[in-house]
Image (cartoon, rainbow, N blue to C red; front, side, top):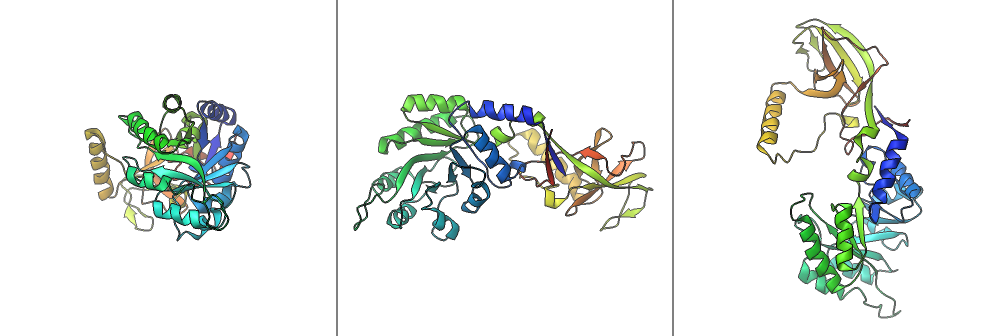
Length: 350
């Protein structure tokens, strides 16, 4: 499985997007298909001063390739030994979403750098307004013996929902609340660059816009994923194949293609099914899968082809009908991958 990048086009998109606002690149999880070290290197090349990662465990994967500060997006918890160890690292900025955790960090050795998270309509993490007021009072608590500040306040973090309706108004409301309690930068997700710039001008504080998907995957035409053909076998109607020995519905070829569950083939995020059409598609797809038919993400001879059985760990078997032209072993065929869940074997720049 290979991800091919049109390097010049991709980097032109990165530079244009990075310059559109005060952007903090996000590199988390599988690195959006590219891998975390590669994205850290690209963030360094862009001149970013700060990189955001998902968890404390991911800091080690980016810090050798990136010389700036690293924000950990998952809120700090006392049971996370890696997060506890990194909290006093001078290059690490810790997200705090509960007053009890802020109190623990204030009392800890060293001087953690913290972002205080406000709860949004996502209802995932963050303090509500009353708890935020109480938390602010802890920010400048000095150590009883040394007189040092308990933590360094780096600003407020606000993670908005993806829906555009009412998004900017929620950002305004929470932004006003935040700067009214304690002035500092607002670190935002899921605003457009124009919205982030507008909000910063209105509130008179820096708005740092975290971007992941729209930065790294925002120009799909610059990216191409392909799979190598591992084997090609002729098959007659009624022949049994695969682990489950299902009968082939028509004559043609069995294609064994690179890519399986270990690469993210056949894996997908659940659909929100927000419209009648999307619900109908989900119902139709589910019905086909229930009777053992599932369309693969592989395109061969101009069309996507059906899985013969569920993907294996590192390869997949699909049926190519007899009226199509089979590829040769060693050829590459296009494969549609969700790059946020993909783990490719090679990343190639052209």
